Length: 498
Ligand code: AHR
Image (cartoon, rainbow, N blue to C red; front, top):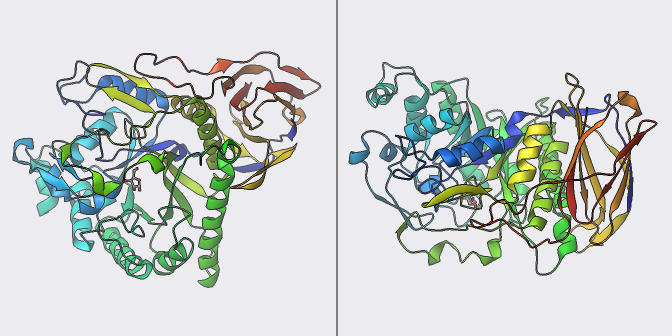
């Protein structure tokens, strides 16, 4: 295929917000215990935080981290996780049928996120708990002192308030699997009242209302409309969650997954704006895509088949080269909606469908999907540009006709850097890119990297952690303001021009 692309610095969608490069740490499987935290590991610091994992988290370029769930939060008592570790109760975690020791809790998470230079995003339990407990947690976390719960935090050794800005009002309350699953009406009312009360405790917080668990939920669309009818004035964001996988041998559809993500985002924008129109409001509600990833969910046996283990191995999916290509294109979908998607969290960070993997006897290592995330987080800078692309379409069972080549670009007016991200979905032909850059003046190609190509099923492993890494491409030219480059079949590409 060929793709004729025109870029112009005047055609801006929105700045690339750093919060687009968030992730998620849930008390699930080995994400916390045996993931970010493993006292006794040769790489652990005095607090038990694994420094090898921490280094990879920094290299990944993560900005925000959501915590402590996920489904876990809907049965969680935050008080269990604070105070002297020896006094903390062992509990049944009903979400994942696991034993929770509570050795790691709020203050440990806050210390870890400080070390990792991450912005925390906390979720409150609106499954088994309500307004009071949400306010209690906020008082403990953000109130300076002189009250029972802020003084309790101080007694626990944290003198200064944590000042957490981002708060999620529950998790996936539309899902029958959720502890405290409820209706859009009941949740909407509870979320609105919780939001109002939490803002009384701390007016500076930003709040996320739960959208649907995924776009295939039977209540999808109407859930958001009803929840926003109740909460529109009281929240800053509505959440989106999505996990994607290849359906059977339908590679064509899987390679076009970003088209599904585009549709999902645009559907929620339309729904939020519909509520704004009804309310005669000028407010443009922003989106928090606070769980997204690839996940072979069809292989997951379900929540009810699990036994009561402590930090069991749960959904430790291996990601292939093909996954990295599709994953890279999902980041492109998020970027192109940067005018409405303000927050996005790759779910999850370590071990549990994680870009980072960790074992107790070896250094942590990076999966294939680590690379497109790290490159995008590092090089998508400045503003996202509105891209004009002309290319051929191909038919897919799941998404209809989809472009064979998809392109997203960013421009940093300070440094002058232009970064082009492109996926070639053709399974056996290279894509010839012709990118008109005349509007930028003189530019040279600093690098063209790609992932994909020959062995689409290849993956990294603990034995071969560096087998799959970005490949440097050659053969590009710039002539008369036109960049010409070739993207091999089934590849995600990044071209950086300076
Ligand atoms: O990330 C795994 C789980 O997926 C989360 O706990 C839940 O919110 C979603 O269903």
